[in-house]
Length: 431
Image 1 (cartoon, rainbow, N blue to C red):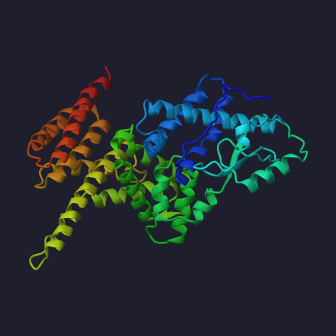
Image 2 (tube, rainbow, N blue to C red):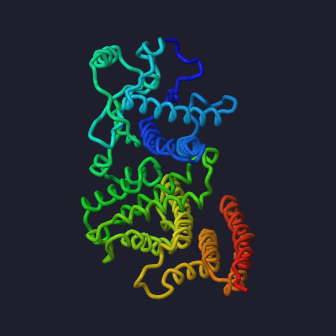
Image 3 (cartoon, rainbow, N blue to C red):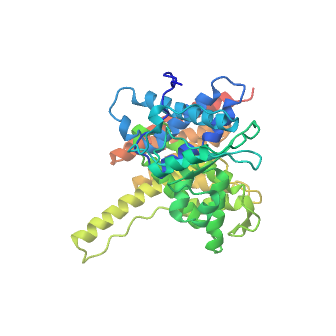
C-alpha cells in the first residue's frame, strides 16, 4: 500500500543535546491530554508554546539558522512531531498499525538521535513501539524488531489517557535519579528547565538538604537559584521573549511552588516546612542589600593582581544589582513577609534600602535602590503616592550622574516604568 504523500516525516533537527531531548519529550503527555479536550486548537497552541520555550531556552537549531522564516518553520515542525508521535502511540494502543514506508526500512540514517520509548497505560499493560521515522536504528536492532513484530500480541483495550515513559540510548534521568545526583549545578539547571516539574525540583532540593545537613541547609539552594537567574539573564537577547523582571518572577515562582512540598522535618534557621524556603531567601536578600566594594591593596600589587581585582569588582557590582532585582521580585510576590514576623518587617527592609541607597556615594547603590523602589510602588498604597513621587524624583537626579552607560540604561528603563506604575495607582482609588 502506497504511503500517503500528505503525511510528512516528523523529524527532529539533526543536532540535539540530551537536555533538549528531555525538554521536548517531557511535554508529550501534556500535548496528548489537550488533543482530547473540547477547545479547538488547544493542542496546537500548547505545541507552539513549547516551541517558543525551546527557542527561549536553547535558541534556534543550527540546521534552521540563516534560512527564510526559520521560526515559523521550527514551530510547525515541533507541532507536527508532537501530533504524529501521539497519533502513532494511539494506533499502537488500539491495535491499528500503518504499513511501513519504503524509506522507513532503511536504517542507519546519519545525524539522527537514537532513542526509543513506550507508552504506558493506566493499567499495568505496556505495548512497546519503535519510532522509526524519528530515530535511526542500527541493522541489528531493526532485524530484532522485525522478529518481534512477527509474534502475535493481542492488542490491549483502548484507554482514554496515555502516560509516556521514555527509554533512550541517551541518558534520560528520572526523578529518582535526579534526586540521587543532586548537586549545585543540577539544581541551577532545574530552576530554569521547564521540562523538570516542581515536584522533581522539590525532590532535588530535599535530597541535597538531607545529604548536606546544617542549621541553614537551604543556603546552597539560594545560591543555585541566583545562578539560575544569572544564566537566564545572560542568555542571548534575541532568543528571549520575556523581560528580565518576568524571568526572575518565573524562577521565584518555581522555587515557591517547590517549597510547598517541603516536609515539616526540613528546617532552615528555626523555620520548618514550606516557609523555610522563603525564609532562606529573605535572609539572603537582607545580606545582599548591604554594599561594600572589593578592597584595594595598599601596595605591592602586580598588574595581574590589579586586573583580577578590577574583574572581581565588576562582577560584584553586577551581582549586587541582580540581587536587588530579585529583592524587588520577591517583594512583589509576597515572599518577604511571614506569619509571626513583626508588622512591616519586609516593607521596612525594602524601604530602608530604597530610601538610603539614593544618598550613598557609589552609583551601583543608586541602581539597586531604584529596582527596589519600583517594587515598593507596585505594592504600595495610594496614600503614599506623593511620598514615592518625591523619592523617585531624587533618583531621577541621580540618573544624570551615573557614568556607566549600561547602568544608566537600566535606570532609564526602570524610571520610566516606575512613573507609569505611579500613574496607575490612581486607577485603584476607591470612590
